Amino acid sequence: MFMPQDVYDKIMMLCKRRGFIYPSFDIYGGVAGFYDYGPLGSQVKNNIENLWRRFYVLKDGCIEINTPIITLYEVLKASGHVDEFTDLTVHCGKCKQFYKVEDILEKGVSVEEALKKNLLRCPRCGMVLKNVSPVNLMFSTKIGIGEGRKAFLRPETAQGIFTNFHFLYRFAREKLPIGVVQIGKGYRNEVSPRQGIIRLREFSMAEAEIFFDPTNKTHSDFEKVKDKKLFLFDNEKEMKLSLREAVKNKVVDNQALAYYMYLTQEFLLSAGVDPKKFRFRKHAKDELAHYARECWDAELFSERFGWVECVGIADRSAYDLSSHIKSSGVDMYALRRYDKTKTVKKKKIVPNMSTLGPLFKEKAGRIKTLLENIDVTSEVDEISVNIDGEKIEIPKDCYKIVETEEKVSGEKFIPHVIEPSYGIDRILYMILEHNYMETKKKEEEYRVLRLKPGIAPVKTGVFPLVNDDKLVEIAKKIDNDLRDAGVITYYDDSGSIGRRYARMDEIGTPFCVTVDHDTIVDNTVTIRDRDTTRQVRKKIEDVVGYIKEKIGFLV
RNA sequence: GCGGGUGUGGUGUAGCCUGGUAUCACUUAAGCUUGCCAAGCUUACAACCCGGGUUCAAAUCCCGGCGCCCGCACCA
Image (cartoon, rainbow, N blue to C red):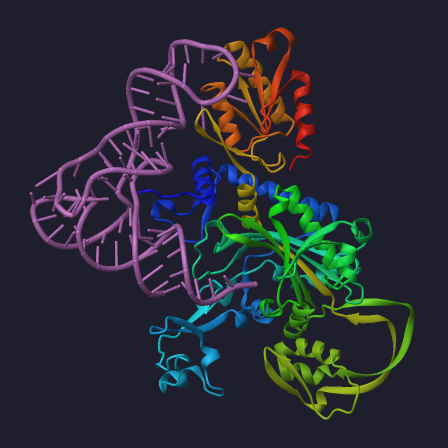
């Protein structure tokens, strides 16, 4: 049987054969949506993540943190993930259609009631529908034995950053903007992950949350890059606009968003993405996530999958922080300082802890904070607070309303967030696909991965031209010197020289150093360039310097 | 989750209909040889997706599961 292979098949075959990527749990048949990174794949992944760090941590000055994968129920409840991602769906066998139960449920009828009384009907054919099943894309677990505490594997790393904001704000000495990044795994229990490494159930992401004063969504480096072009697509036409034009014409909402789009573009191109297979696409209103106000996807083109979303750059506004303030009661506001401290008259709630404390016990602390944050502008009869969705009325004897003169040094506000969120696995695949080249050598298929030197898992192959003890000794010495200098090498003395070059080309090694008979005479070796196959002769003592310079940076 | 297709060494395959433990090539490894782009020779390693059933006997027939591919649905 003839099975045509596309680039994806060929790349995945290469990946499996050469230790980049292969299915997890393969010996037990594998599980869809899970892949292992082998020795070379892990190296490439590290290189991509470290390149990313250069852009965000080194260049943009973001701070990096690490938070748990297992995430408390309350966090994801507050963030909206629990409600937004638990959908009941129902299937009509006749029409072969899936429906969200809430879409076809009559108002005021509970799901149980609808099922009992056969009120769920297919909107198309009217058949009674029964096989209701919840579709929850989060992996749930619990912390501790017995009842434990409800938890999920995080669907994004972002929540770990938001729940840390008050701490990070202080760490950054209360100055905005603050960029915080996290690289780690996220989990989504996909219904049908059938696109290899493009749609994983456990995946790596690199996320940055940049906290801004909403009245000042600018970036200090914007001036430097304002004339650079962005490749934009607004779902109708593709255009090349400078950052300045894009912001001026309101194609992109603000400077900060435009700046991080530019940073993303630079990162992807320097990681080896083909510029012709790159664009930013703006989300239409109805495809925005529940938390997003404006969102641009960096899409990369795959011959197999078409345009694939690899980075999402969203303006999450104050959504997450205000949700967490509301549900945790913790002060996560930022302060916009006035030039001079103002004195204002203000009505204020002063909790009376001696009655409030004994009455509400463990909730008293949270109630106190909430009370103090209530704005008492007009006459109020009743005061109530919301804790975990429960409305609690506060008796009059638990507080006083007093008019005070307060010195105000600034205005409190909830920072807005711009979030560039990168799918590392997708980017890795796209880099492989964009740099996979096929040629013929003597009628035989010849494969080259033209990876950027910084991304390539092995930087230099080192060979003795023949298995002559003298040449072997010199080659091993050069190999050692390169490794001492931090350059990952691959020493190889088996097979013909052509075969050894071919092995290195296939895994994307940019340079090969070969020790030949002339080396013994004049102390020089050849250095072969992967893409041109051309060789230059260099003194042995210059090899390390030459290679390091060519690689550009070591990650 | 639904429908269709499919699953044999590391890779690509022959064998399946018509049951009798598996073909060929490449790769890999060792040796010889060669001496700058997958050369040659010798040798070696290595596979029937998993679980049941039928049968004296299952890669082959039947059932179930899992994976992969295509379409539908889903996709923060």
